[in-house]
Image (tube, rainbow, N blue to C red; front, side):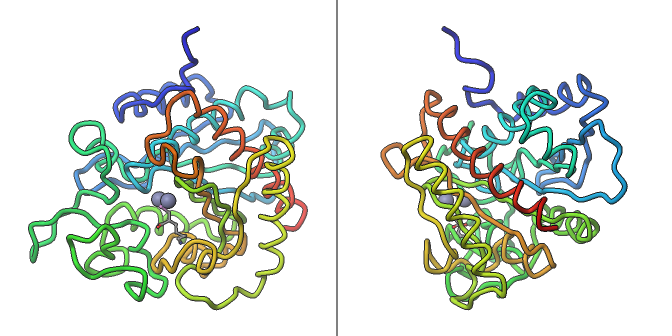
Length: 308
Ligand SMILES: NCCCCC[C@@H](C[SeH])C(=O)O
Ligand SMILES: [Zn+2]
Ligand SMILES: [Zn+2]
C-alpha cells in the first residue's frame, strides 16, 4: 500500500506547499507566522497550533525541526506531529488537553538552505549555507551559534569544521530569527523542544558545561519517565540525561540558550536510530520514530502543563 504522505520524506518545496495548505485547511486552529528568512533568503515559517477553547493566560510549547540539514527524520516528525495533533484534537485526551492548555509553535525546517542542499548536492550536509569572507568553506553549525558559552570547548572557530560556531553569537539569520521570536515570547513559552537525529536520546541542559542546572533533578525525572514509557510501549531504549555527560560538550546550543532565557523546561531529542541507518533512516521507519518521539513529547508536555 502506498505509504501515507507522512511516512515519506518531502522536498523543501513540498514542505512549503504543505505549510500553506495546512494553514488554509485549518483556519480555526492553525496560523502560519513568518519569523524571518535564511541566509539564501528562504522564508522561515512557524505554524501556531491552538485549541478551539478560548483561554485567558497564554502558555505555549516551542518545537523546532531541521536545524541540521541531514537529519531528515526531524522535519518529518514536525509534519507528522502537526497532522497527528489536528487529526486527534477532541478525540485523543492527551492531545486535546495539550492544545486546550498550550499553543504549540512548530518550526518545520529551521535550516531550509541546508535541507535543500541535502536534496540537490550533498545528503550528509549538516550546517547552514552561509559563506564567510576569510574562508572558501561554507556553513555554520546553527546548534553552536546561540549565545550560550559561545564557541568554547565542543565547538570550533574554523569555518571548514562541521561544528563551526559562526562569526559571533546569532551571526546566522536562522539562529537570530529563532532567538528573536523566543525573546519576544519568553513569558508564554514554557517548554522548548529541539528535534534532531540520530542516537535515541532525550537530553536537557547544559551541554555547554558539566555544570548542573538548578532544576536538574526535575528535568532528569521528566526524561527518565519518558524513556521508561518508550521502553514499555515500544520496547526501544533511549538514553536520557544532561547533554554534557550523556552525549558530548556542545556549547552555543539552542536548548541551553532557551534555558538561560528563562524557559526552564528545555530539551533536545535525538530520534532514531542508533546507527544502523543513522541519518539515512528509511521511510519505513518514520512512523515508528515519530510515535516514540510523540510519546516522549506528550509525557513531558502534560507534566509541564501541571507544573506551570
Ligand atoms: N545543546 C546541544 C544538545 C546536545 C548535542 C545535540 C546534537 C544534535 Se545533532 C548536536 O548539536 O551536536
Ligand atoms: Zn542535530
Ligand atoms: Zn544528532
